[in-house]
Image 1: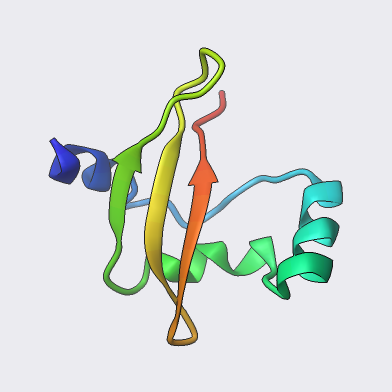
Image 2 (image 1 turned 90 degrees about the vertical axis):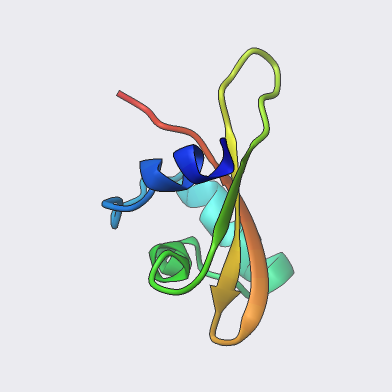
Length: 76
């Protein structure tokens, strides 16, 4: 099942995000949401994590040798 979720991300290289969330993330965590696509270039794992009726995915991986997790959903 986990591999099935991971395959969903195999061809994704573009993310959309709220600019306000990007600014907040930069200030609080020093991580740019623009860079999240690079996490998919290395080893990563995906886990489904639904909340408030929305299908969401937690992606665990590395960004510049730092372990990161981001949560995303598919739109459109």
